[in-house]
Amino acid sequence: MQEEVVIRTEGLSKVFEQGKKHEVTALDKVSLEIRRGEVFGLLGPNGAGKTTLIRILVGLLTPTEGRAEVLDRDVTEDIDYIRERVALLPQEAGIYDRLTARENLVFYGGLYGIPEDVLNQRADNLLDIVGLREKEDYQVKGFSGGMKRKVLVARSLIIEPEIIFMDEPTTGVDTIGARVVRNLLKKLSAERDQTIILTSHDLTEVAELCHRVGILYQGQLVAIGKPSELEEKYRAANLEEVFTGLVTGEGVYDS
Image (cartoon, rainbow, N blue to C red):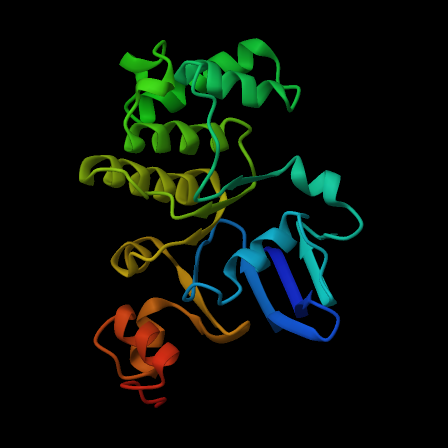
């Protein structure tokens, strides 16, 4: 049976105007498909177009050309439907410092109209998973950066989204905490069939977690495939060699 495509872009472009005569192309005719239950790594140097692509897919930007669909809905026409079913965890996500860990989760879920009893049950489960149950009634203003990141990861999952966009999900998290987050993402993909679009500068993490990766450079999708396939295709020892070679133009050879 063919796997369900939950994200599809066709010839997607985004051009920003800077001044009256100067334009910057952030995305240039990007076409890709992402399947349900897939952990998809979106890679690229700063300014490659990763954030622009994600912001289009969650309805924060309008494409200049091309088409983008999420859950079979056009992002320019049915964004309210999409937003109820996707979660976004930006790298610089805000958190309510004066609320406790539990209150952060319950407040966020309440914005989606989820009943209180359901919210409390989900919060219990997520706080256990990320290892913050003993700190659930502490204000997060006293948390370390890694602990706050765990709260944010849990908060993004409280609505049980079908698709989760995560920008550097283990930023600032210690080694043990990062392992907890990685195992959680694997579980969400394998057991709940949730789709995760992940950006990370930790290419070892990407190779471990992602079924496939797409590499963006100067707004163009220059490579897409399983990490092992790309390593073989470009005769590279690992994903880092593939990435740096495609971005610098040195050290990789298309077989």
